[in-house]
Every structure is written in C-alpha cells, then in structure tokens.
Length: 140
Length: 482
Image (spheres, rainbow over the protein chains, first blue to last red):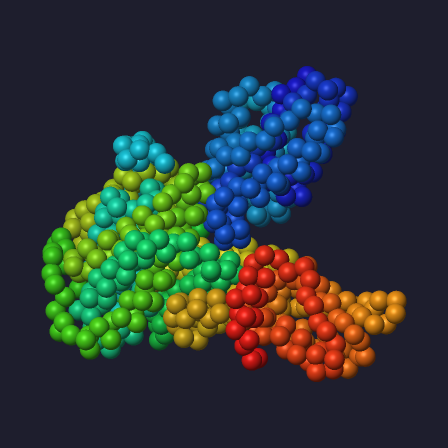
C-alpha cells in the first residue's frame, strides 16, 4: 500500500487536481497515509514573485499561505501532511528530494499541454517519471 | 548573515562552473550593450570584467552578477553622441560616488516609495527599449542577415531541449559566426562597430576639463544612472535572495555598486549594475557565492585576450538575436497574464511608466513619473470622505460623524457635507473615525466652526485621536486664518 506520498504542487488549478486524485486513490485507508506537499520555486518564478510582491519575505509568506490552503484541505480529509518549499530547477529538485526520502509514490501533474508543446518543451513530469526511484503517478 | 569565508568558499565547485557559464553569456551582451551606448566593444567588456571582479569583493549580495547592462547603456546614448567617451568615463565615476553616498546614507530603505506597478513598468520598458534598439540593425539589410537572426534565435530557444550544459546563446553565436565566415556572407560584424584591443584595462584619469561646466553636463546623467543602477541592483538582489533563500545587505550592495563603478570608470569601462537575467542564469547553474562573480569576470577577460580575433568576426545578426532573447527574458510576462486581476489604477501606472520611458528614452523619467502618478492616485483614493449626521430629539443639536482621512486633498469635499444654515443651538463633530494630517485639515475644522458660529451655532469636537489633537492644538492655537 502507498502510505508515504509526495505530491509536487505549485498551487495552480492543475496541481489541485492531482491532489484530489491522490486523495481519491487513498480514500479507503486515508488515516494511515501521510501526504507531503512539495513546492519548488524556480528562478523565473522568483523573478515574477518578487516583482509581484515587492520582496523575498512577502513572496515566501504568500507561498506559505498558498500551501496552507492545501494543507487545510488535506487535514479536513483526515490525512497527515506537511509542506516543503525548495528553490531551484523544478525537475531535478523534485527528483533529488524524492530520492533522498523514502516515499512509496510520487505524484506529479502533467500540464495539459498539446502534443506539439509536449514534444518541443519536454516536461517536469516526464523527467520525474524517468529519474525518480519510487513509482510515479502522473495525473492528466 | 553567513561568514565571509562561507560566502567565498562555501560552494567552490558550483561557483566556478556557474561563473564560467556566466562569462560566456556575458560576452555577447557586453558587446551589444557597448554598441547600444555608441562606444567601442572594449568599453563594455572592460566594464563587465571590472564590475564583476570588484563586486565579488565589495558587494552585499553574494551570487548576484553585475556588469555592463542595457538599462545603463540606454541612458548613455545622448551623452556619448554629444560629448564622447571621456565624458562617459567621468560620468561613470560620478555615478559611483553618488551610489556610495546613497549606500552610506542608508537610502536603500527609500526603495519602498517605489510602488510595485512602477517596478514592473520599469522592467517592461527596459525590455521594450532593448528590443527597439536592435531594430536599427535591420534597416537596409539583406535576407542573409534576417536568416542569421532567425537562426540565432532558433538555436537559443531550441538547444536547451537537448542540453543545458553550455549556454545556448554561446553556441548560437559560435554557429552563426562560423556560417557567416565560411559562406563569406559579407554581413556586418562586431569589427565594423569599433576596435577590439586585446589588452588588459589600464588605469587612466578621464581626459576632461575639471570645471563646473563639466559637472553640469555629467551630473544629470550620473543621477539618472545612479537611480536606475540602484533600482535594478536592489531588485535583482531581492530576486537572488528569493531564488537562493538567503538574506542580503542592501546598503552594502549600494556601496559596492558605487565602488565598482568608480574603479570601472578609471579603467575605461562604462557604468553598470546588477543584471536580472545573468543572476538568474548564475543561480540556475549552481552559483551562489562571491567566487562565482569573480570567476565570471576573470574568465571573461581571459577569453577576450585569447579569442579577440574571433570576437571581431561575430556578425551583428547574431548579437541582434541575443539581444532579442534578452528583451524577451527581461519582460515581466506575468504582468500581462494577471492584468485582469490587479486594480485598474495599478495597470494605468504601469502603462504610464512604460509610455514615459518609450517617449523620453530615459528610464529615470519613467520611474519618476510613475512614482508621482501613484502618489496622486493614492491621495485621490484616500481622500474619499463620508459624513453622517443625526439630530437630537428636540431639534436643538446635531451630531456629525466623520469617516475618512482629513488632509489637503479631502478638505474641500469635507466642508460640503455640513448644513450651516440649519437653525441649531449646538453641533458636535465626532472625529473618532477620522485623522487630521496637516495644516489644511486643521484649517478646514476652523472654517466649519467659523461658519456655524456666524449662524449662532456652537461647535464642539469629539473623539480626536492623540496625534490629531496634538496637531490641532499646535496649529489651531495659532488662529490660522484659512
């Protein structure tokens, strides 16, 4: 059974969907499950957030608030959870964190790009599937 | 704050590799920014070398990359065109002195007076200016040039899908240069834009008359460069703070930028500042310490001395392609995406900031206009005042409840809320939910009182908070005749 789960999230609608699917997956035994939420802040996101919020402290606060909503949702479902915010390139950071900790399953969202975009741009989910040691669930 | 030792040697491998990547990415930009400013490529290259090396020692934000930048180059165009290089070097030194003064006076905290919408406008205007500055290179050109630009952009954006080890801008430049040379295409090259000497910079005093007239020429430019340089540097510092999840010393950074510019001016370089794009590249490539900036500067100079002959053969088309990429990367695209979510007035300030910059070609004017407009909009928003009133049962007295801020912009509206002709014995003005801010506010209260008393109605105030009543006592006691 998958009990220790890692969900990569960025607070977007799309990552909410992958979280909902995860909860659905473990709904039969959710009191035994821990879901860790991982938010990786990339360089471009840092730039956009600092411009949007003024400085790094406010940006960090906003990210925590964003994670808090998701945490509350999980707690309301009766699932143990904690949030981790890391800085760096999304794909390698997610993979490194996932491989350094013993997770039973890693859940990532796929961004719903069209075929051309997926082919040209590559994707975080693709890399995680390839390099994470644990089983990976890609929520479409 | 981590120790100096940690800031220098805490991340040797990451810093050295990232520094080399940054050096490779800096070369095309330093050359292109020199050409924007209208000086020889060496002026920008010397500046990038000197600034990144000096900042490594005196900066307040380890891991941030500073060098010759587009924002600064754009401010120098008219100075160079009208007075020449020597005046630019003197301006660079003066800019440095002003920045050191800013740092010593802890002026970094005044950055809070620059609203976010102005910051976003600044960044977007910078991106647009860098883009439009490239359009000159397209005039009267052949299809070969257009093809080379397209090829440069294609390599820059598509190569990272295959590998991210080498910066794609560098590969693009090498590939396009190789094609241009082997085809003998006859397109314009860096060599056509100015001389590239393969020597280390030397210490020189700018050759200008040291008098008051010189100062009146260079001071306005230096002030604009100071403001824009610090603005972009402190903004970049915040971004690096966020990307590395560490703190930085903003006043030390202001001083450091100043020291770097002073030294750079004496060594024949143009004024520079921190670079958002390069700093993001540095952090992404694993750089986070002071060593990364030092390696970037030294490696850049090494490459120029070794490869000078090749550098002059880089086609302008390749540089134009790189600059278009820089402008796309600089633009804050999320500001367009979120345009429907933020208040209309903020969008207006952002657009006016951009518009002013595009019209005046001066980023400093744009920031100034944006700040003034924001202040006016703020004053207009906060000057909304509401007054409710109720009479006593016997119609002998009335109480007015005032909601809102009383200051110069709101007093005119404030006075219109009172019915002075009403036949009353007494009026009470309840100011519990109000605040008096200035002389005009006290004057308005005096005026209301005077008008009521002309009609034989007594006036009393209630609920003034401590600050307001102190102000009232101080000014009101003077019997000011507003």
